Length: 440
Image 1 (cartoon, rainbow, N blue to C red):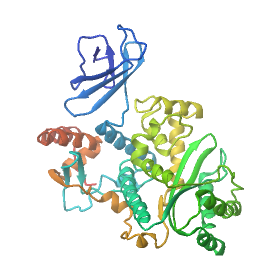
Image 2: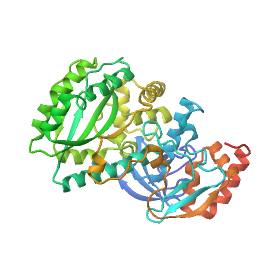
Image 3: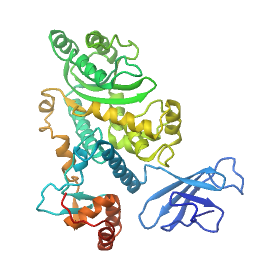
Image 4: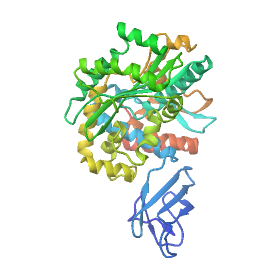
């Protein structure tokens, strides 16, 4: 059995009591013993259900008699709390003058209170009326919202293209780079190399040869043994009978020449360019986006590189935190990355990618597919969720400032989801401890 204790703390539990208890009280939901366990041994994984918040908590045995809290993507409230903490860690690094600092702090309209709403579909609470930075690169709160909505729109575009009898293929373009290369220089050269495939007479001839109607390009990066690895993925919308291999052969000379002209050197023929069929495009779409990276990306098996969100997570919590999976911890050890190194690398990344567009639609494609005008990332992030929601409370200026000083965004939303009538007591506690007298 499992019991809590003063020694254990909120993220650990010890084996050996008569009943499972934690603070707040939890009930045992399921035990997952190791296959070779003896009756006297505790299970490797203990799953508990928090009756007060509805959270599913997982504890993993780290040494005999002790289970430590581990991250699970089913724990929605914990996921949200971590995102706010990751955002706060980024703010400390970038300073108060950044756009990120104003996000979820400043009101859209200073004459109106912020509202707390609850979705009638998901029962999740959210704030309405805060400014949002919309950064898909550095904001752990905005990025999932923006990329998830972008993903829905891109998936819609794919279906509309198929309905018109067009083919969809997935292109991946990479270029040579090495440890110690300035990622800003590599990124600028990579974009210049891509331009060689989209501008000029040779690019126009390529479009006609492969029947390229348009493309949706995504800029991404990882960090591995050779440093930062910026690269492109592009969904190609084609009116063609050519196979992916034939499209790749036609595209390769322009991509190779573009990389060389940009100063990147000749890319690997094996790894520098890959064009795959529609099934791979669909698979990529299901995994693309910050929602996936922030909830499941760091749980991937066999990780050989890190995403910027992995670096941000380590920067915020350290490599020993329960949200760091064993696979991610192994990668960190192999790459020699501790919390300080993660912070330094994340700052380099944030400075390099600032101002870059993550998602780019080729000219005329949205109109051709019958999609409306594209909203900015900030507009998407600032908009309320599209599902029906009810307002359960408002946040006046004093309450807002106290919440900000206490970094209690997540706590407020949890109380709203559990029982909005408990908000006045929480506000009183926050105001007593943290005040709320100066305008922000």
